[in-house]
Image (cartoon, rainbow, N blue to C red; front, side, top):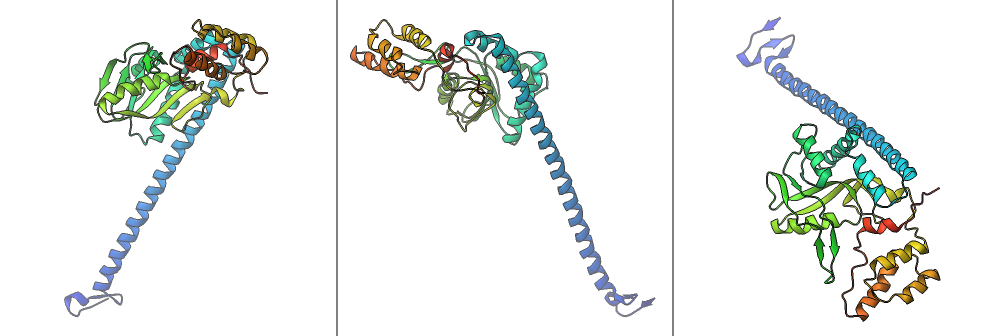
Length: 309
């Protein structure tokens, strides 16, 4: 079996020992490579399965959200009653899965590497879920007070209903990029008020995730579980409601000309009313408002909700 020559040239079944060692080393690395490929495949398969499950879960939550909205549209006539009931529905224990699914979507998109900022009653509810271990935030976490929606004053500067105050903070707030997670989005004034506050710390919001989006403008930096205008027509306001908006917002300025344009059908949107009101404001020495920065939540009170057939 063995032929003895010099030590390094032993022969086993006609194969030199040094060649056999070389073959074994090559075989070892081939096996290692195969193991690596199998493990990589299993990991990818697990991630793919996880992503598939998440997408199915998100789709389920989108369907659930649509059912909630459709049900409320049947029971309310719109306005504040509708908005308040939408917001309240997110805090029901039976709808925790909706919050969980959107949160999982944030983690997936951000590769589980993000800072989070929360606000108001919804933020308090999410914070409770975080503290209880139902949700996890990998990096910095900030929770600020609610009722801070912004509005334009006569000097066309953003003011807020309340001062933004930090109620809870874990980690750093300086020089950070934050994800804002909120229940609803209308004009974006809450976000703007928080961004104004964050500037003091050289921080800013890079993306916003919400459950319900009531804004009629699309934004790549805003993602929602349900966007009202994906299912409903745009602004549909009757002349009566347009006149009501005009009288509620004219500041005792003469608006006979604007009334006539509404009744003739020449003005059909709130934005057009505000453009005409700006002309009157300038005429009377007042500062115009930004017609693109009207509080969307207030504006929607005057709309007739109308579903796409």
